[in-house]
Length: 88
Figure: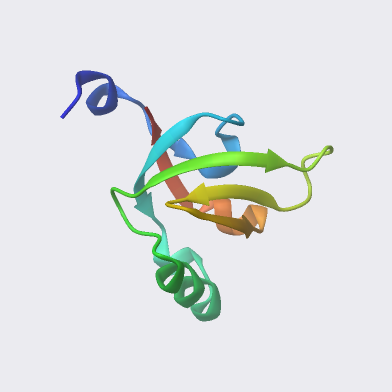
């Protein structure tokens, strides 16, 4: 594993800057509702997955658009806050 990735401090996906590549470090499954957790699993969210924030709403209250694999996915900020990522 790359030393930069190994030493990266995890932060929530909602705090990741735009166009910053990261790896999903952990997901707080208990902090999500059952439908939200199911949706994330169906979309392929899991530890070790590469992710990139593409767009955030102007005032920081709306959804976050991110790329996971070749998909673009919109997430509520509460869901994004439950996803810890390590910047690459």
